[in-house]
Amino acid sequence: MKKIVLLFLAGLFTLGANAQLKMSSRTGSEVVDKTNYYVVAFEDNAYQIFLQDYFESREISVSLGADKHQALATVLQMITWLKSAKKGESNRVSTDEVNYNFVKADGKTLVVSKGDSEYCMAAYEVLVPNLKKHRNFILESVDLPHTVGHITISDLNRIQKKLLK
Image (tube, rainbow, N blue to C red):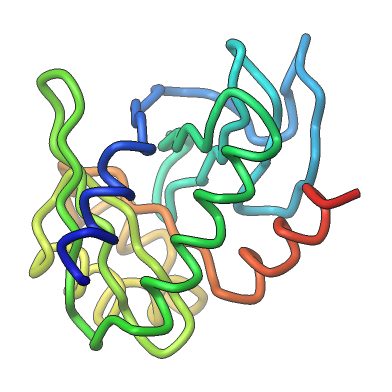
């Protein structure tokens, strides 16, 4: 069953990292939901989640599907996987020449990055909690080769409700 869910997720996700994009500017797209760290919009003929990187002005885009039904199915699969996965468990998704990892960071957070699961967990457990106190030091001193975005189960539930409207 786990392999079926993972294959389904892999089949529905089309990912791409876009450098230097702003979360607030989604021109020419229908915005479904928006917070400080993610935007769900209909862009490039698909519903997508644009996850803001913790550390830089980069995004990771996750394609949910070409219509609301596909987008809703993908969000439900993400919720199901996040509820059933163990902390630190990852789901590797390959698209074109890029590999991404979806890692359950804690009971409610899904981290998305090109880095492996160890990279994601280290960023989430070591660097993220210290961003509020030592933001400048971390940004200036730590070389982070991979974008690290996140979304929570409550965010996914909120997106689900917005897609149902």
